[in-house]
Length: 183
Image (tube, rainbow, N blue to C red; front, side, top):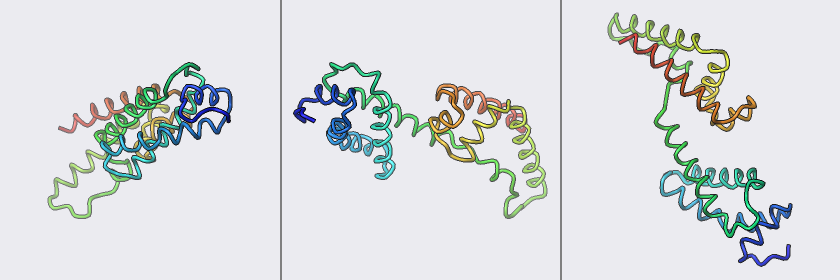
């Protein structure tokens, strides 16, 4: 690689034409900034590091979408980073118990009607899952039981992450609707 490491435009052009050493230079140039930014919002150093690595990997995957004359990768990388951080916050706020946790009875039942309520709740939850289409149920279970990310599900099922998002949104709506019957 003959590019000056300070000339990011040149590094981008070389990387896009197949020079992996140019990408390594870009990685070194941006990784720490991404990590520090992610660390401010994600108070887990390992997770912040993983997020920064994911962003660099996504950039690698999208290199053909970048213009050759782009002066810097930084705006593009931080756009990706913000989306990943927002997705991380969504994951935390949409916590739903895995099916396995719902199907085991609580360790102690203090009142007789608690057991009845628990069984009714479990039955409603199961009915809500059974009402989903096979594809939606699969996506829902991959997310809730296996803890897979939207992108992992998309890759596994060969669908877009937007389709995964739509399936999950519709599935959550259906499950909530069924669970409201219990109230």
